Image 1 (cartoon, one colour):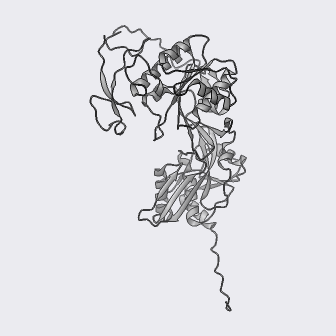
Image 2: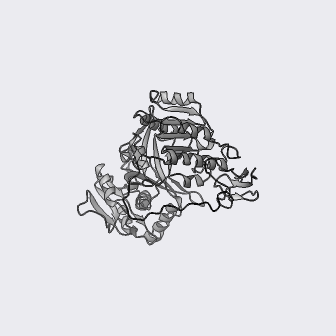
Image 3: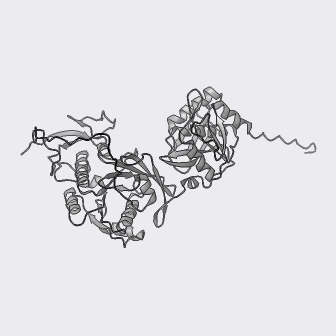
Length: 474
């Protein structure tokens, strides 16, 4: 019998140590290290010992860089926004890891995808490790999908799941909800630990490659928004998708963080309704719905999420502070980016924010990561400070450098075309923009320096009302 080894493994990042310690040096987490037993050799050729098979390798068949490139065969899910995020559909033999906050709608979305695929005659398995079969059926009845021929099971043993996938007709899609509840008899560790999650995921990935079925693994999310469990699972799978949303808003965003068979940072927008998740064909109109075009401190940003142009409103509020250290609150944007923009506005444009509280919000709950939002955020901040509303038919995009210069960004034409569809007639953008068309769909107003933007907004400032003289008889 092989001797089993034990080690102390961090439950957040998977780093292993020879002894216990309070803080993980790899990820900085406290009290995340626990004792685990090393995994035994997995059945079917997984994780062999060092001495086994030494010197028994076989030469690989090598190929050149030239040759006919073939697109991986895909299976469309029937949900357009989901297919957009995955790159056109599910790739046969691929493994997708999807994470999201509890109650965000992961199981609802996957139930709808399973039902749409099963109704087209494909064999679909839904394996639940957290809910009973009756609970999954109740969700399907609420969504109106009870008639879909989806095969359900409540199981947590990975070997049983693999045997079920191998029995009967070929399986096209398998949903594992969730990977933290799965366990393998070949791994001497408790379910949910790093070793058990890694071992279970490896068995499922090997089965997916051998059978050609697409496997979707559902992962829990920690308080920091990261998928719980070892980060090595993200490197093992073919795609990592996050399901984002705010409880105060009725829409959800499906974002591709990693995708070996499609573009990354692609988003799909869904709306949560009484009948489940419905697709949003025009997310820009949804994000801009109900905006107050005449209020100061609001700028419309023309952004790019993956390959899709999206318009969203950036709101800023600059108010006098009664604190020794003014507040800087940000929702939906990088706080470090806000600090940089404020520093540039003070140093290059002569504006004073040091004695004011600054609040910045991306309306609608969308989170923006691209630097092209610098110009829109700066316009909103200047507008709020000066009390001057921005033109309601203008959009803003551009990256601000530390020198105050506005740098060009990519895909300017796509941003302007999306804005023109929604009725916007002017675009404030960097000058020069290399990829701008000769006949753009809207009026271009180049901004070379942050000072130009400040002067333009200051010229629109409303004059202060004159005091009314008191009546002599009053």
